[in-house]
Amino acid sequence: RALLGQHYTETHYSANGTEITEQPDTQDHCFYQGHVRGQPDSAASISTCGGLSGFFRVNGTTFLLEPLEGAVAGRHALYRAAHLRGKRGTCREPGASLQYDREPQIPAAMKLYRWKSGPVQKGPRYVELVLVADNQEFRKHKDLRTVQNRMKEIVNHVDKLYQPLRLRVALIGLEVWNHKDKITVSPNPEVTLDNFLHWRESELLRKKPHDNAQLITGVDFHGNTVGLAKKLVMCTRDSGGVNQDHSTNPIGAASTMAHEMGHNLGMSHDEDVAGCRCPVPKADGGCVMAGSVGLVYPKLFSRCSEQDMWQFLGDPRTSCLLNAPRADELYGGPVCGNQFVERGEQCDCGTPQECSDRCCNATTCQLREGAECARGECCQDCKVKAAGTLCRASKNDCDLAEHCSGLSAECPEDVFQENGISCQHGSGYCYNGACPSHGEQCRALWGAGRAPSLPILLPQQLRDPGRAALTAVSRRDVKCGTLLCLSDNTQPILGTGYYSFGYYFGRFKCKAVIAGSDAGEAAELRLVPTGAKCGEEMVCYAGRCQNLLVYGDKNCSAKCNNHGVCNHRRECHCDPGWAAPYCEQEISGIAAG
Image (cartoon, rainbow, N blue to C red; front, side):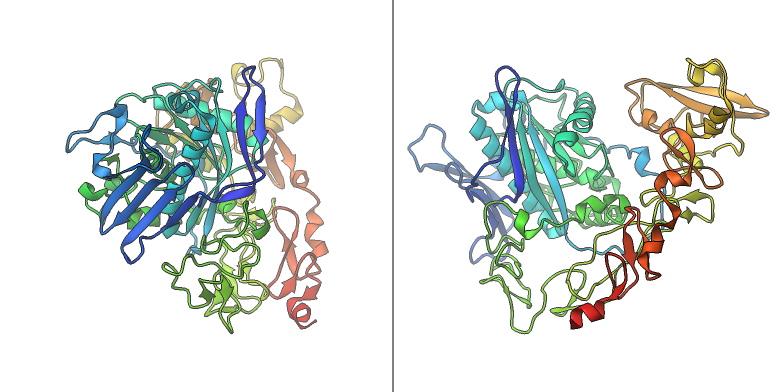
C-alpha cells in the first residue's frame, strides 16, 4: 500500500476558489506492493481501490492490469506493457521514444562547498512528498476521487521503484486544482517548472512542510518531452519536478516522476555517465534514468544511478531525508509486511517471500529469540552496538560525528557544528553545515574566478538608489551586498534574465550580476551568501556585516558540562558515552539504572 503520514491531507477548491483541506478519518488499504507467488524474479504494484489496476513483472516481462471502462463489473484488461497507448493516445512505432528531459543543469547553489567526505551510511532515507494535479489533469478524469486515487497509484509505483535503493517515498499531501490552476501551466516544460517551483516556495511550503513536490499535468508538453526537474536539489527550495500524464495507465506518469525525482536526488542520465551500463535491455524497459523511454517502461535503476544518489546524499544539506516516520505517525493502522515498523511491531522486513532478515520474523513482525534489533546503523548481528560506536562520520569542518547511544539501533539525527565556528583554515565561519565564502560563490556564478581581496564601493546604480551617500556602517556592509568577482569569463555560467556589469578596480575588472525577476539561479547567486566572512568575527547576515553574536551567545557550549559542544541548533551534542540534553550523565549509568 502507499505510505500516508498521519498528517496526510487532501486539498481541492470550491467554485469560488476557497481552499478545502481535509484529513481523511480512515484510509482504505487499497495500494499494495509485492511479488508473484512462486516467481522469485517478479514484482508487483497493485491498486484495489476501484477494481484491480497496476502492473506485475514475471521473468522480465511486464504486464499491466486495469478495469474495462463501461464493461460488466469485474471485467478487466490484462496486456503487455509494450501494447500500452502512449503520448497523445497513439501507439508508438517500434523504435520511437519519449524524451524525459535534457540532462538538467546543476543549480549553482548546490555546487558550493565541495567537501571531501568519508563513506556514506546507506541507511534508509524517506522522501516526504506532496503531489499536485493540475486542472487539465482533473478535466481529463472529471471526478475528484478518481484523480486522487490515480495520484496515489502513481506514488505507489514510484515507491516500489525506489525501495531497492533503500529510499521510501511517503505521500503526505495531495492537492488537486479542480477549478483552476494556481500557476500558468505552459506547454513549455521549462516555464511550467519555474512557475511551479516559485509557487511551491511562496505558497505550498508555508502551508505544508515537505521534502519534495511534484506536479502531474494533463497539458501536452512540446515535442516528445514528458518531464523536467533540476538536479541535486532535494531538500532545497528547488526540490520538485513537473511530469506529463502521457499514458492511459498510471505507470507512464510514475516512470516519469521516478526519473525526475532521480534528478532531484543527484542522478544523471545513464547515457551521460562514462561506462554506465543498464542490466536490462531497452526493449525490455531499460533503466529509470535513461534519457528516453521506449515501448516498455523501465523496471529498475542502474548501478551508476544508485552511486550518483548516494554520493549526493553524503552532502549534509540532504539531512531532511534522514527523519524516518515515527511509528505513531503512520496513517491507517499497522500493516505487517509493508517494511515500516508500526505500532505493535518490533521489526518489519517485508512479506515472508521477500524477507531474508535473520533477526526478524516476517510473519509476526517481531524480533527473533535473542535478537535486540533488526535494522539500523547501530545494529549489528541482531545486537545494538555499544554506546560511543561511530555511526556517522564527520563530513567536513562544519559537520559533527554521530555515535550510537547503546540504547537504540538508530543513529542519532545528523547535526552540524555550531554556527560561527571557524572553518577552512580560518577563511570562514560555519553556517548550517557549510563554510560559505565570497570565493566559492564567485566560482559557482562565473565558473572560474575569485573575490577581490579588498572591499570595493560600487557605483550608485548598483547600490541602494535611495541613498545619496555611504555611511560608515554601509561601507562595512559592502562585502555583504552585490557579489563582486574577478573572472576572465565574460558572462555568468547559468541562468537567464540578467546582465553583467564590469567595474575596474585598478587594473582588475570586477564583475557583478544585475538580475531581473526571471533570472532564476543567477538572481539567487548575485548576492554574497549568508554566513560569509566579512571581517574578524564578522559575518554577512540579512545583507549586513554583523558580529558573530548574531548567531547567539558564544558561551553556548558551557551548558554541556565539558562533555560536549553546541550544534547548529544550539543544543548540546554530547561526547561518546554521555547523555543529552546537557551531557552531565554517562549513558552506562542510565542503562544500569
